[in-house]
Amino acid sequence: MSAVHLARPWLTFDLGQKMQVLSWAINRPGFAMANRIVWREVRNADLPQDLDVHGWFARELQSKGETESVAFLTSRDVSRFTQSKARVGAITAQCVATVGLSNAERVGHRIDRRGQDWGTINIAIRLAYGLSQTGLIEALSIAAQARTAAVIASGLQLPSGMATGTGTDCIAVAAPMGAEDYAGLHTEVGEALGAAVYAATSDGAETWIMENGNFAGAPAPVSDQL
Image (cartoon, rainbow, N blue to C red):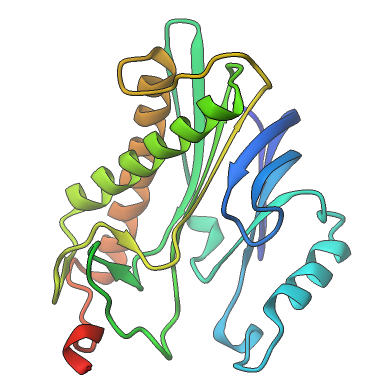
C-alpha cells in the first residue's frame, strides 16, 4: 500500500506519483493533479468565529510545504485513521479515512450543530487504474455510496432517524490519467473502490461509536426551529 504518515496534527497519504484527484476539499477542490492528500486536525480554539479559515489554512499548508496537496480539515483525532485495500482482478483500491460522527446527519434533515466539535468523515482513495475525468466522477459517486452504506450499517441514531453521514464529509479520489469512462457497480474498479471505502469507513465508525455511544444526542432539527 502507498505510505501513510502520521505526525499530529497532520496525516499524509502519499500517492506514490502525481495523479489526478477529484474532490471538494478545502484546498485544491475539483479536478487537480497532486502527489499527496493531507489532513489537518483542528480544535475549536484553532478556528475562532471571525477567522479567515481559507487564509489560515493556506498559511498552515505553506509552512508544511503542502500547498500543492489536496487537503482536508477535521476535528477528529487523526491518529484514529483507518485504512483498507481491496483487489478485484488486476485493479487495486486503497482507502484512508478519518471518521468522526459528532456532527452526524440524516440526509434530507439538518440538526443545529453550532458550538460543537465537527468530527466529520474525510475519505481518500488511491486507484491503481487509469480513469478519464468522466470515470473519476463516477468513482466519486461510488465512494459516496460506500460511505453512506457504512454509516447506515453502523446504526448511529439521531433525533431525525438513522445517520447517513455528517454535515461536513469530504471525499477525494485519485487515479492515474486514463481512457476508462466507467467505474460503476458492475465494473471491477467500482467493486474494488466500494469494498475499500466501505471497510475503512465501517472500521472508523465502529471506533467512534465505541468511544462515544450509538446515539448522537443533539438539539432539535433546524426545520423544527423555524
